[in-house]
Image (cartoon, rainbow, N blue to C red; front, side, top):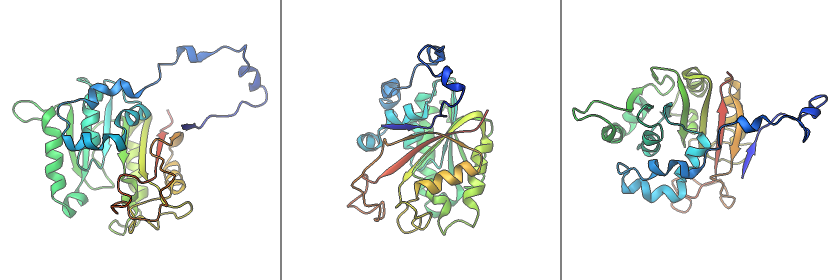
Length: 265
């Protein structure tokens, strides 16, 4: 079930919301569905390790929630092992671009992140090894060097990393501003992350790798984003939200929030 943020019809606007009013929804583009992304999900460049995670990560539903279209310019912010990057590569088509960003800080902590970035990009390049529709980017976590305005940015299970003790004070605000500035007017930011207990703020980002959903929303809207839609796509009501997300008892079954926010046009 999705929770859509819509303005209320009040006062004289009630007439416009009546059954007899003109319905502009007839001109709206068709809704995105998971099956629209079957080609991306079945891409032969996706390794078996990705496919093994699909049941939990629901790639078609995620792409539909993000409303990814052919020809778009999309950023994968903190790409990690490249799971989302590979899905985006086919979703944007031949005329689109995916900018796969790996922070310098992550590579310094775990050099394998650099290799994983190279491996994720390679299948979409030319015979000489030059990048094609997927462009690798590296830089400071708070200053991703996206080279052109983007239609969409996706960051999955990473927002909490901006608020750990590993990052200087203010990294979260600086990084969110950078994402806001990187989007076209009207562009969207999709955020998925592990839920902490309500009201816990950022206190669990270090020990548990979780962040309170409302704290995330407050930080994102403070930068100018407008919350457009929430989804319970990754809801796990049985998760007590008090264990480290890498704990074997909960790994792959954590309660997660999914948000789509828009930069005003």
